[in-house]
Length: 149
Image (cartoon, rainbow, N blue to C red; front, side, top):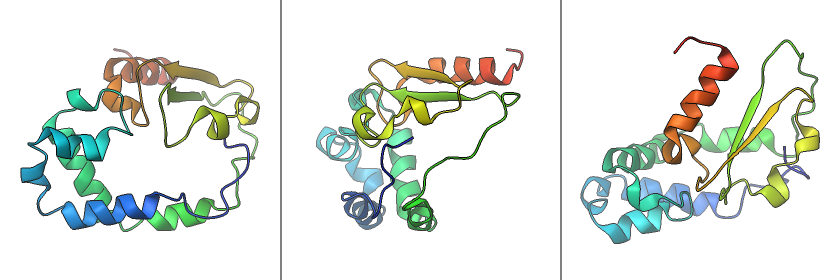
């Protein structure tokens, strides 16, 4: 849903991945300190101070150990999601209002979404809506999939 496809990896991604890999072994200790949590999560979540220790530790471990992270990035370079999606397939697109990773200005182009898609912007929510607005995300999933509660 970006206006122009990325032609190279996002500038800060390598630094974030290297930082996660190098700090993975000490994250269990350092994430007990507010300064460490702030460094790692302030730009990801407006509610970074409320994120649980477990979420932060899991996120660092996932980023550190994700061998597929850059191959996925590279697979998206110079590409867009431009295939038709049947109206029979429900689509809900959720962004946080403070998503700095996929900002509204360059990465949230509604005209590129399927016409039948529901577009949701969650307040006080960053790049990981499931962290910042857990109940809202669950409600949207349940509504989109029409699963009973």
